[in-house]
Length: 231
Image (tube, rainbow, N blue to C red; front, side, top):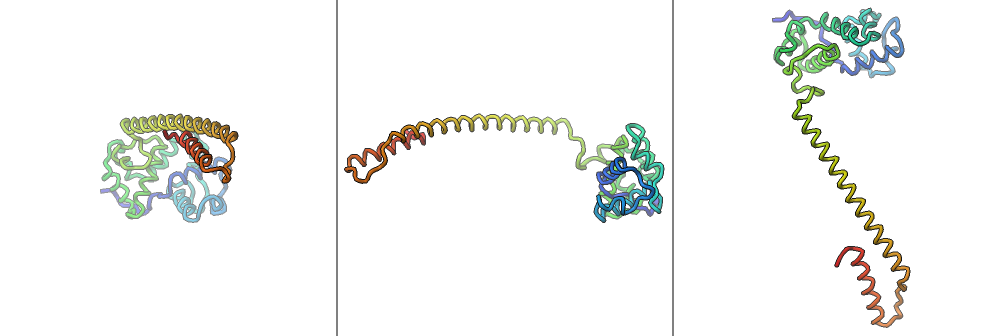
């Protein structure tokens, strides 16, 4: 049984956390991080969760002043950044790191998060933050932990099916485009032909005798049949 901790793990979307780190990289790390720093970029709830995350992971102190670990996450690159992030995670998520994360079951993973006193309403979000952070840190997680998660790696058969579906759709689009082009050419030709015929065809005159009127109507019907493809 894991020793219970009172501090709830971060549950802000990891993308929000990463966006904030990128913001600090572009703008520089201020002497104190408060609402005046993030207020224009994040909503009240997201900003509050973000500040809580920074404090929980010991990236800022209770007054909002940055620590060296935050500077490492913002300015370090490649393996060095992974190392800093691994250190930050392992310091806080001690019950989770007691597991063999490369083999742990979903149940074991959930129990580790419950040991923090995490409520059911946010526990999935807490797990999601850790999973994304662990992936960025290069920590290997078991397929059991990742099962059912959005953004997990698809297996080869799924990728092959997606590739085939895309290929079939592409071929269908090419075929449909060719058919459409052929139809457009045929319509254009018939329209041109009809224009030439009508330019030489006399306008209907109600003063014509009945035989002439019938012949004129028969001629127009014949032209319509040719244009519509009817025999």
